[in-house]
Length: 190
Image 1 (cartoon, rainbow, N blue to C red):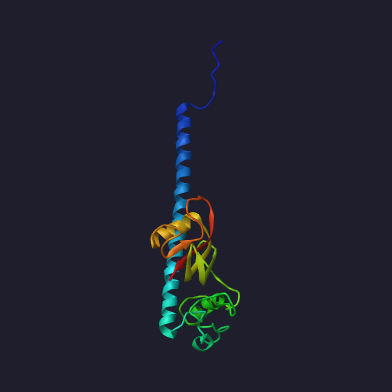
Image 2: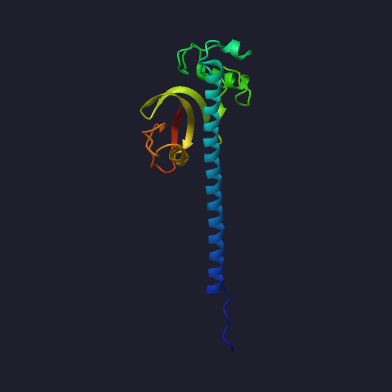
């Protein structure tokens, strides 16, 4: 009786399958990296556009959006005026909620904001505020991005500033290096 032949995969077939799986995983990971990079670029563009909008509003009306004590005159139909103290604050009135409405009604940004409870969102999906805040040991008016993945915050800091969470004009409220962490607040001061 001839010996029975066993059926199975050869080493070459297994190697080919492993190479294909490796290529698929590499493609998926590279694709995710490209998506993350595009989101970071969009957040940076949003930061630059908001900074330009605030500067244009200031040039035109000699006041900060949200803090403008003549906001209802400068941009009719706005929900209110700020107190004119040079800080986009959260007292009464809540100037940080007025700021996007003043910019939108003035034609400096697109969108529709009610001036009381709506906020802007980032490409990553977190809230974006024009706000006078203390982040990473520095206080002042800036653009605050909430709940960014740590890798996004660090990339933004590296591209716009010095790459250190606690120095420069881009600050985070916690140090980088906690891979996978969510940074509650990252600010680009203007």
